[in-house]
Amino acid sequence: MEKNKEALNDAEKKQKFDAFIEKTKNELKQLY
Image (cartoon, rainbow, N blue to C red; front, side):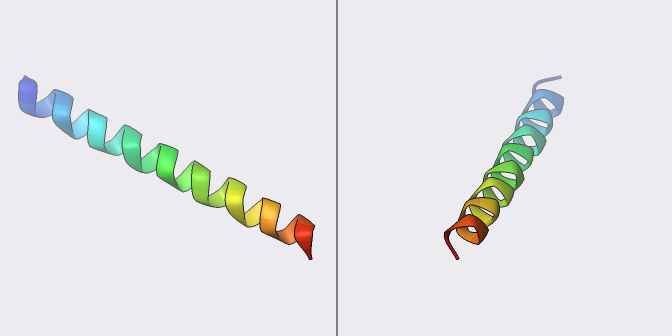
């Protein structure tokens, strides 16, 4: 059960990271 929870946590972190990358890319586009 704990292992499952950790895997879920990692997936969530990756999702947040991907969203952060997208947001940053969009902000950079607006600068140029």
